[in-house]
Length: 438
Image (cartoon, rainbow, N blue to C red; front, side, top):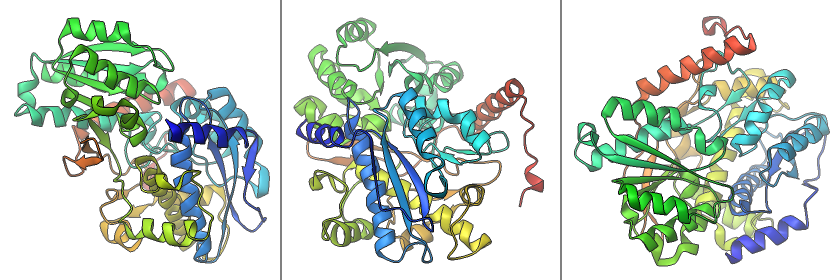
């Protein structure tokens, strides 16, 4: 909680805008961050990690000599403020190369805008899953994995726990979710998998910010489910863990979304969090070579972005570092095609995002072996992985329970294509012919 307060106080001092010294010959990236409010821990850790990695790249010569620059705008995780920040920054410093709002609500608000402005938007592990169809969503990249892929992997994991997916028949699974676009996003996949495997899905919303859940846990106690999937964010998560302890629901039978699987989610819950399992799409820790470089070259030089340096290597911090790697590698890929040592246009960065090939070998070269799974995108596939792993809190740290794994990818992709086709029809978008894309 002290970390959250420190992040909030830091955010209050920079509520307007913070930036690096920006030159016109740099690759400019607007930062739509949130360092105040109930979700400050996530925003400060994630964007802190991204900025730390950008600083590391700059300190080691840039991308073939091209330095990165950024300007930060506080969104407070508010959709309208997020759109305002995007509009404020998109044309500054020579124009935005790409944008990452870290908010499903803000991403929804920017879907049409980024397509009109021709600025690629990443939604790294969140947002609208149908954007994985690059034929329809040319400018949106849910790189790595989506909520739909995560939902399918969760069901796969629970199936493994009970001895097979067929053993889920007759089970009760609660979807306890943040009552927002974020919380509602996985419901179609859960419903489809419930119909396929015969388990009962009980949907229970929690109003923002989620610090009151008495009625929800009374409902859970009465339903006596086999598992509770916690699709929470911010203060909702430790509140859910403490509420589960009060009603006697086993924490090892709770399975959290990856935004409910950070140190800030479990430490405030104390002993009530022990045994809790969550999803993840990257691994935490300070032993990765890239994290050691950040510690020595950035924090050692007094340039670290985290207000609390002890958060280095935490879930949110490392996740932000991985996002930074994805963006840098997309720019590097674009330079390979359009000219090394040049500032890339937004469309060229979009091409780079669409041709990512982060193999295990390349990830190892970046000093991040086993930190995240391989990602290979294409015109048709803007997700590029769909892999998830599961981890358990033992009271001191998160321990891996599984390797990176996937759920029912065929079902998810079918749903992605159907949803994207519906969106294209509503918006009168002609899907691209990927056979004609270079």
